[in-house]
Length: 223
Image (cartoon, rainbow, N blue to C red; front, side):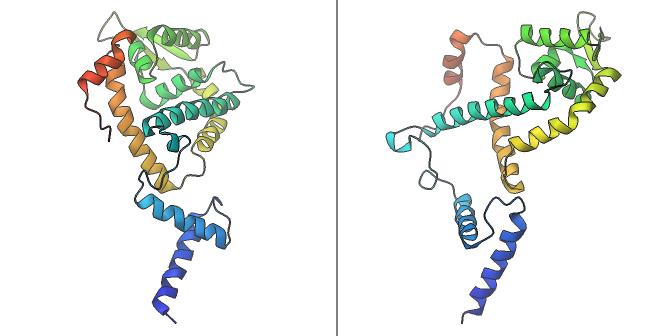
């Protein structure tokens, strides 16, 4: 009997048991085999061991990434809608703006809108609704009298705290049953995309020129 092999298998079983805390895999031999398969695939993801719909018909990985990001955004919105159901909030943007102010402190209207990746007219409408509800305060900036500084009010903090349990549960559901390691990997990859797109968004390039401008300024790996 190969005792070293038996020892390795036992260690793998212990690792499987500790990482399968959310029962992502069945607690039987089939679940154990599936876990091992995915562990091996995670080590070296490539075109050969990653499947996507339309792959055999020539669908590009860029197309899949774009579609999945759109889908995930829509899923997240449905959970956000559920999180504010029956509350004083009308839209998810309202509580996102409040969370931003509570987390990062006071900022100008432009900074708040930019931080939430929205167009200025839409952002101003959200801010005006929050002011009307007395959930935020608006004062003149001490640095620039032309700018308005926004801060969350105590009433805003109170209304936000009423929904925070549901909001936290919604964010938990959005990340699904990813392991901690997978969450960190996803954060790293999404941060790279954020760091690429955010400066472009901040330049307010006309829509008619946006794609051509980005393509001209960047070299993309099409291999």
